[in-house]
Amino acid sequence: MSRFRIVLLPGDGIGPEVIAAAHRVLETVAGAADFDLELVEAAIGGNAIDTVGDPLPPATLRLCEESDAMLLGAVGGPQWSSLPAADRPEAGLLRLRKHFELFANLRPVTVLPELAAAAPLKPELLRDVDLLFVRELTGGIYFGPRREQGDGDDAFDNAFDTMVYSVAEVERVAHVAFQAARRRSGKVTSVDKANVLASMRLWRRTVDQVAEQYPDVTLQHILVDNCAMQLVREPAAFDVLLTPNLFGDVLSDEASVLAGSLGTLPSASLGDGSRGLYEPVHGSAPDIAGAGIANPLGAILSAALLLRYSLDREAEARSIESAVAAALAAGYRTADLAGVDDVAVSTDELTELIIHHVAAITSPASQSSQDTAKLRYNTEHFARGVGHEETTR
Ligand code: NAD
Image (cartoon, rainbow, N blue to C red; front, side, top):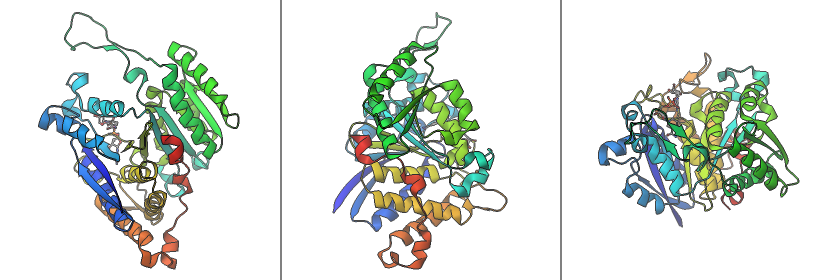
């Protein structure tokens, strides 16, 4: 029987709460599957700073190097915000992404019919919204040369960050976007600011060159400011959005409101091999940490992406996605999503319901029963991402 090692990185704030939920779901899936999961926890972020003085301790990195995939909650919080940039919790996450050269961040944003009412946009604008952000993750302004006051020399009175892109960095992430588009509607929208920024003119030129290898995919370019507007004006007009690091960070958070709540969205960060880092799109939400109300769906659906992309277990990924859809269809939601007609439940209660549905879907005894058929919701919404073989190359 195959055995996979997954490193769980709960992190800070609500991170441990949502990772505990994903952990239980993964154990349930593995219990019914023909593979074993070894789930080991490691420290990252603020709690790692507090315990060992480093947001990415060497012991954590070692465990990650020996793993098949990593599942992270979130890092950061106000108690660490006065530290120098290089010592903050977020620095640990940036180092982890860079260490494994996880250059492509996939963020699917789908609007499930059950959650359309939870979004602030008119329902007619949300029909058929099914986006995939492919965000460049290890380059651009988050990694370029910078100078900051407090980094040892306080004599200067300015600070700067630098957006640097090489042709090779743009090419590799553009290939991911074009290959994903081939499995979807065959359309890529590349986001840049080529009217003002030199790095973005290189971005646009390089994407055009890569596009020549994909004559079956339609490419359009859009300036980031216009994209921010069109995403709420006509979101269904987009399919695959290829973005530089900074723009993808901002736009995918904006797009998350289409799906009802930041708490529902998963992501996958992939490089050249099969080992990936999976994390909900949301942050550590210090305002609700410890209250037991965090939405665990982003973390649970990230676990599904992990099964799909790093372990190549499509059936098990779909069983989780089906179970999530079933719990939502039954009207259960955490507080961030609950409307007047919904049943507001805690993190643990929603997790319990999803586990119940996963167990029903994966249990051999119930595979053919009518009850199970009812639980098998159409998961095309979730599963239309990109194929494992195409993204991990
Ligand atoms: P956030 O995503 O933590 O929270 C934004 C809002 O969404 C808050 O009102 C929060 O309560 C709500 N929210 C987020 N996730 C939720 C969930 N699962 N269920 C219910 N409600 C949820 O963003 P922020 O407040 O800007 O950042 C807080 C901290 O998180 C900061 O330190 C920031 O640096 C860090 N952060 C970390 C990551 C990461 O680890 N990848 C990403 C973004 C922000």
